[in-house]
Amino acid sequence: MKQEYFMKTERIGFSHWTETDLEVASWLWGEKDVTRYICATGEFTQQNVLDRLLLEVSNDKKYHVQYWPIFDLKTGELIGCCGLRPFKSEQHSYEIGFHLRRVFWGQGYAFEAAKGVIQYAFSELNAVKLYAGHHPENINSRKLLTRLGFQYIGDNFYEPTGLYHPSYELNLLEL
Image (cartoon, rainbow, N blue to C red; front, side, top):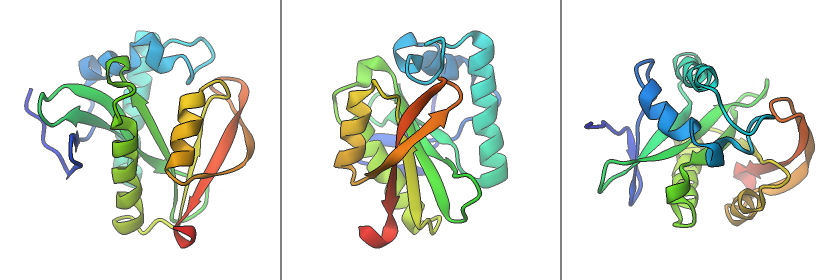
């Protein structure tokens, strides 16, 4: 399938989720290793995958951001998703997130994608702050957020897992 990209990094093309992407979304959120830290059960049902896809499409329509699907520019293979969603009621603030298929772990794709999204947020969306969080057991996400320059600001309750997740902030004025 040929993708159109609105943004590219060295190895990654960023596209947009649409209502017709359920099969592609299932490749990502149907993988238990991807979802084990983002919901209480550790895995998504097909209905959960559909709900997540429709949430991303809705966020794009309402706010012009989503956790965009990302693809390997050489092979066209789905890597995962990386993107933004509005952060609570703060203007010009977003939450960044990323979910990668296991086959792409440990190869620098999450860092590369997040760097691209951070630059996009600050330059194209005029963001002043970005927030992020991770499951308390997800040490690799903690390391990645720290490497990206995010600062720990406390723990916040995350309803989908029923746990308090470490939360982080990246402030444009501190870059």
